[in-house]
Image (cartoon, rainbow, N blue to C red; front, side, top):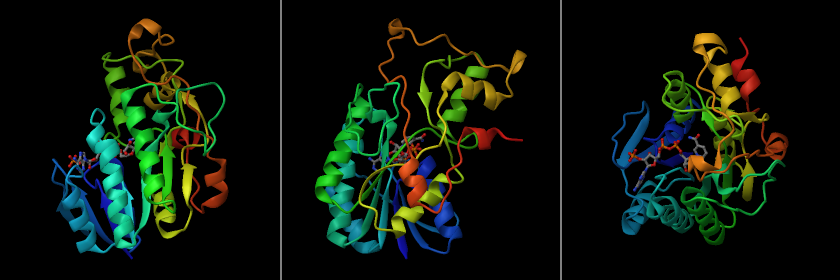
Length: 271
Ligand SMILES: NC(=O)c1ccc[n+]([C@@H]2O[C@H](COP(=O)([O-])OP(=O)(O)OC[C@H]3O[C@@H](n4cnc5c(N)ncnc54)[C@H](OP(=O)(O)O)[C@@H]3O)[C@@H](O)[C@H]2O)c1
């Protein structure tokens, strides 16, 4: 099938492209500000804030499926409105849509979040991801919406760069910020499965284990002594950070639905 990956120049979009090419798909990928070369991928420039351009590209590519990843942390027009434009164009072209969402739309609480839990955003990025979901679900009720957590792999991963920065003493990794990291080698396979399938609606696709950023950073870096990152105290309200604290995604439905077995922290860190 022809797969269109919007945001192929990004970390996750690029990984989805690589795995799709390896699986023998025809892949068209887009960039916006950062041109990228990906083996086997036809690369086009696209700005998702340009409605006409999004429609024209999707109509020209005629994909069987679209994986929609683009976002900019502090830009509503890209993260929320852009997602809606991609969804409209996918529907017009009759393409299957997989939209990437995030655990950041939850406020945080000790109990795990189920697939269908309504968003409770506490900061602008989370609010934009929540708005994107609402738009995509209204435009394309058949779309799959993938809520995910920290995606970890090599140093191209923002989360790994954060650990490296902590090792250098630049940032603290808080003991009470909990997430469900997932391996970048397995996660794109789940997205491709969804692109080929017919799951409609929200689905948590994250690692099976929850871990604090501090524990994750310590384990990832080898653990103790001089290699131990600057593990913070619990995050003080005075830190000024507005992002959610404890967010556990319950991905058991995805585990039952998908052939792909998502690898979490314990397998990632196993020798
Ligand atoms: N990485 C994670 O741990 C994580 C966790 C949870 C959810 N997610 C979600 O997964 C998705 C991808 O994340 P990522 O880490 O791969 O992000 P990323 O590496 O920052 O990539 C963002 C992508 O969006 C594109 N983009 C930005 N502005 C655009 C515009 N105006 N028009 C078209 N494309 C534009 C970028 O293109 P250029 O670089 O070429 O400008 C890039 O390809 C996001 O939706 C994010 O919310 C990621």
